[in-house]
Image 1 (spheres, one colour):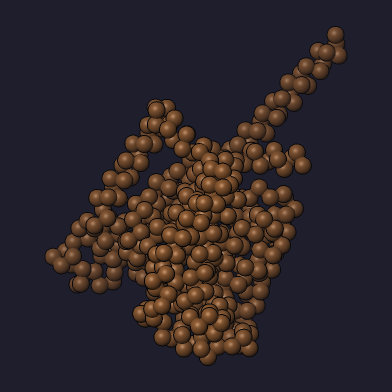
Image 2: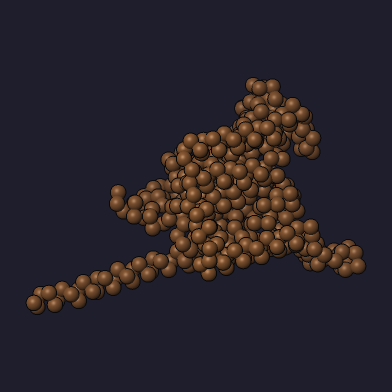
Length: 433
């Protein structure tokens, strides 16, 4: 009897310790969710201000606002075309959210939608249908000469480029290699950009399916990317082709599929567009928040550390900062960079109208433990910051094609909302191995 009595307190203490440990580990993810969500929602709000009041940021941050932007010339609070739709959509989403958490019939309908899945055959048909629609939309541009301002310079550079120039200067040599191959092997400089954009659609499907565990999420992400005006507008151009975002997304996919070679496509993406250097923190965060085994995470992070070292050595060797201009800070240009997304994606109605609701929904998904919901939040945060940092610290201007990355991860973020993968499930799977 005495032994049984002595064992009972020990068992109770053990149970209490386990509960305390569970509470500790449950608090940390919540804190991290808030730590990612708060700066992201702030940046999203600032970015969407020009969609409601197009002149507000420019009016308040320009050094010439006292003269050029006087109230009798430009009223900073004049609403834009997107103001009413943006406010209405966000109010509707807020009402739906309240109805969901009040446990109304709305929650039942949303749960049914979220739990819906398709078969492999249906997924295959869906993928083929999306690619056929993409080909039908863009096929008419293949036989036309580009009219973009940068096209003449790009074509001239590609015609004079050869592979021996790869190590002589820091340029987007991998991009030139692709365009040169397209021009000389196929006789049309737009063939490979078209194939690359089709591959980006496919990669979006496979990456979304991989991180969510649902084929329907991959199809939804493909459709959302295809409807993006920015993506379609630049999908067959040699001037602003999409190899950089394709390679970057492939590097993320390889982290989960087979991590050792994943730094290779990321490194090549830099030689397609140096902008992906700014995405380096996204890779690190994605690895840290993945469900990979601890040793795999360490090795993968170490491999990207090697990439960082190579980039630093290359910058020193080429005496380059990778942006092509001097780095100096301009406060006015920095703040006006926040206006770039709303202006340059003004025809991407779904992205502009639903960016704020998606940010909030990803936060709640992250709180529920949905795998990579917080990663998508962090990706949106970094991508939105590239515009003000580019104009604020360099002499470069923001161009619409750079927001293909936002369209891509917006589409993937929506797919994550349909995910069936949670951190607790992944932890149990790893512990059982």
